[in-house]
Every structure is written in structure tokens, then in C-alpha cells.
Image (cartoon, helix red, strand yellow):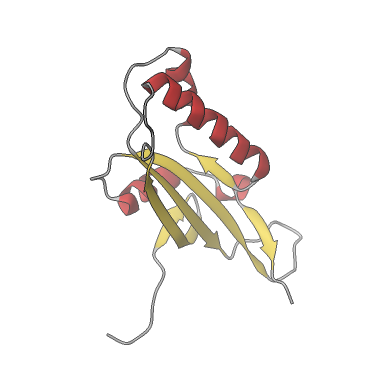
Length: 139
């Protein structure tokens, strides 16, 4: 071991992005009672609030979650909610400032699924330039 740490990288469309953070938690922990429909409705409200306040957030399968709630699907969302934060050196055209672009991705998965392979599958078809936000360095 050389002592150097490397970040995991993921292909997001044409951009190679580094994983900066990955968090996972049990999405039903602390729920005393409820139904799959109620769980979906609560998550939709939370996720839409996050989307409104976070321009660089992508929520995987949000339209499917909405459609399932509207249809009152009687199965639970996958139990684990995952949040990944990615960064890349991409800059929008005309930007000369130093900095990096950032994208957060949220999805639900089963507890035994590998979050790294799931992240790779989710982000590969995405358009980084349309979803990520450039953050200039603070000097």
C-alpha cells in the first residue's frame, strides 16, 4: 500500500466524476406505523422540498415513486435510502474560475444491494452538464 488514497470514479455521460460522499440509512427506521402509500407520500413531500432547494440534486425514479403513490401501490419502497455526492472538474462554457462541478444523487435500494454498482448504473446515462452545478473555489 502506497499510502495514497484514490476516490472512486463513475462515468456520468461523457464526464468522469469522483465520489465524494456516500450515505445510506434505513428509510423506515423509527416508523411506528404506516402504510406503503403513506410512506411514499411522505417521501415525495420530503424529496420535492429537497429538489426545490438544491439545484444539483437528481432523484432516481422520482416519477415512478409519484406514479406508484397515485396508483396507491401496496408495496413498500426499498428499505435503504442512499445519497451520493459526486464532483468533476467540468466547467460550463465561458467560465474561467477555478472550481468544480457537483451533483447529488438520491435513490432507494434493498439493503443487500451493492450501492457502488447501483450508483454506476444510475448515473451512466445522465447528462452531467444539464444536472450538475459549478462551484467556484473560495480564495
